[in-house]
Amino acid sequence: MLIRRRRTLVATLVAAATAGLVAATAGVAPAQAAPASQTQQDIADRLRAIPGLTVVSESATPPAGYRFFILSYRQPVDHHKPRGQAFEQRFQLLHKDVANPMVLHTSGYNMRETAFRSEPTRLIDGNQISVEQRFFSPSRPDPADWDDLDIWQAATDHHRIVAALERVYPAKWISTGASKGGMTSVYHRRYYPRDVDGVVAYVAPNDRVNPADRAYDAFFQSVGTDAACRARLDGVQQEALRRRPELVAKYQADADAGGWTFTQVLGSIDRAFEMTVLDTVWAFWQYSGQSACGTVPATTATTDELYTFIDGVAGFSFYADQGILPYAPYYYQAATQLGWPSLRFEHLRGLTNHPGLYQANSSLPRDLRARHDGRPMLDVDHWVRTRASEMLFVYGANDPWGAEPFYPSTHDSFTYTAAGANHGANIAALAPADGAAATATLRRWAGVTAPAITSRSASDGITDLDRAEPRNERRPL
Image 1: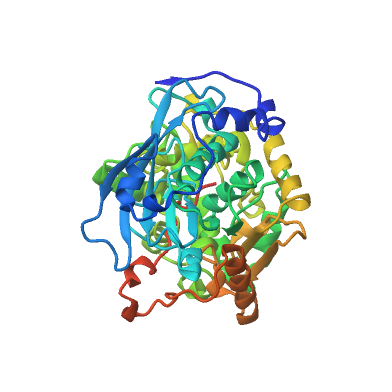
Image 2: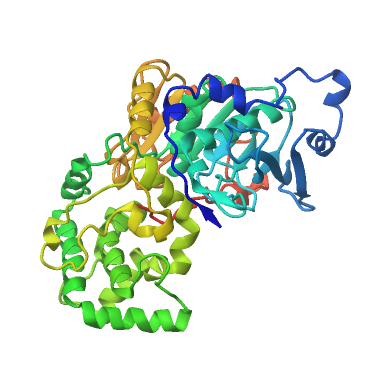
């Protein structure tokens, strides 16, 4: 059941660090040094002793050198009402040693259920928790009042988890995340700046003023090194819209075969088709890049070739109800607070059927569509520019999401851009000098020098942990 009620965000912007903090920490005792007898206690027993925390499972075959747990923590649905309705928030723990630093990985989406090490975890040889964002299933209240899904409530979820676990893990804490996960780590830092000792945010967009999106249009006019590639991509979109009847027919055949429907969100297969075509150029640069320009078909390509290319880049299945509904919490946050990129699509004038389609509310069921409040992003942007400290941002030069980046203060904070990189940019992709500087900064914040394990070679026995850092989102708006 979805309960709709509107409440102002004054507490979010004004009282989050004061009254909100008091409400959030009710029932969570401050961290204390563990008695010597407890330091020898089994980690599973110490976790079970934390009020509100449940050990859901422990892997019988964990990665070498680690123990791996699935956990949940009981959270208030509304942190302004800590004794009200509650829900269980999932997170995972990759445990190495209580003496090692802890990395708080904020997914921003669902929690990955298999073990992995984020790049900061590898670089500091840390323990790691990865937290599922509130309202992503199954970490969703029932009934769900979607007004309780905002950046302060989510930041307070993370604050309470830190407060509970820092008793067990007293060393330095680093938070990290990529894309929306990176945004989430920034918001947590803004409202609870003392929770962690540093932040590494990857490819985190910062839509400071939602309607002011000319930076995105400028990005697509200059991205990459090949103007002909950009022209071919524009041509694919134009030709797809010109061949709408044939392509929609192919889309319908795939929908019939896959059991896809379009009634709950986009409303029709034609709207879903147009949204997928509009998404194609963005998705190309987000996930592929200059090296894939040779795969872009010409306007003389067959209809089958056009369909296959668009499906491979943007994915026709995503805008079916079955593809998009799991991302409703993201689109709700984009519609209400985070903002979304609004492109002009001047090269597609006269070819589209659905004006105003490319926005966050289009990707939500009707009863979740809401008005945007621009104040939270202005507040976060101002804080990051003027007061933030120990924050490190990494962007990819060819990633559309980096067109509107965060600009941190000069208080021990840094921004690095990986040349030619897409939405998978990380420290390893930086120029050697930048990568060395970023790594040194991270290790300084974490209080470590040269970790025992930093390689990704087969000899360390944990390569599966490092092959692919999770990117939980398919390109959302």
